[in-house]
Length: 98
Image (cartoon, rainbow, N blue to C red):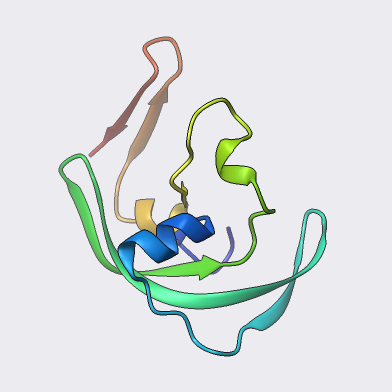
């Protein structure tokens, strides 16, 4: 997610009361043009915490949060992980941050 560290579906915006700007900007997603709305948020993943991570709302297609058989709360991207060394252990289904 170039230019950001977090994206989420509409229910997360509503439940967490994220304030979005009235006007977004146009971008190009994998499925074509999208309008995204930037925001900042403090994120915590386990003991890892980043403040004022740039988020972008609007890039996820409607219904995305339920398509995988579980409720997806969002996508954390490189804007969050940048200060860490990240290891994905797919056998143990674990994520390690240092």
